[in-house]
Length: 370
Image 1 (cartoon, rainbow, N blue to C red):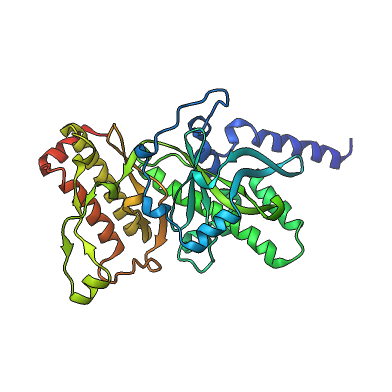
Image 2: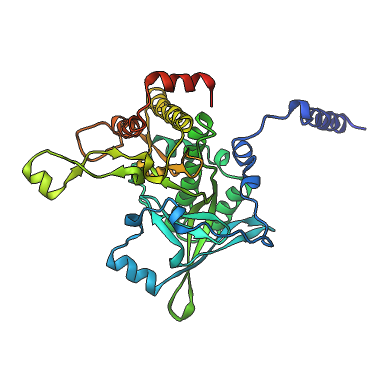
């Protein structure tokens, strides 16, 4: 055996040694994130669960309303289904058939459309956004530099495969943008989930293909980041608001854009034991501390409005979902009067105040733990 052959054999043995379990690197970001999600979203097609009645769902009817042009578009080109797209067998691969119709539409936010699935889950389809949107700040730059860390291997391979199939750079850039946004959504979710894991509604992010019925039934296909969550009965925080008293500013503003004082009535949905009020007050304070921590340590604004906070019924427990993180210097709430951190915290504190609990009672709950 020649010297070079001996050296080659020795090198292979060293490589094998360092690949043993004792020297393997720890689990990746994606492995940690996906752990347990398959259990959360497992569904048996042979088991048909009764649908949750619409009146028990956190549905904001104002968000369901669309303008004339949008309503006409949905009527002419109705959405029919969504599928997850990944990379298998050296090509793009479609699975997870999710039938949705305009009748399944539950609402919309700034970045997503929400539809109800037949198996008591919701599907959230990403809306088209420009790179100039303040959502794409420092964290977007972070995932762009380390994209492989935030995408599953098959997703990263899919991105490369799709880009190779395209001729024009502009189309390749669109593909790149969609996958970076998917990575960004995961990072936002992960940052908050690690701080208050029991309060964040489990969310599975994936790249989806949305199908619409076009002219002569020819499908209109759109690649877009999606996510889905388990459908749970409850109410948005804003549904506990009683609009009774206007805030007086000046005659012009009061006429053009009237605002109301936040008068919460937690008893709108039945009598709640004091022990549950203490628990939810304590968890709200955890959300406040998380919001402050993100601002002070990372200069990030936790974009959490009343429609992103749900009170689960009948348990009367707190869950948060569909939040985003914005750079402090990019986030503009639009009023010019209050900082976004102050605005979010003030809303939460007003809701806690409606419980009429003393500070001592809330502190007693915090000593007990979660």
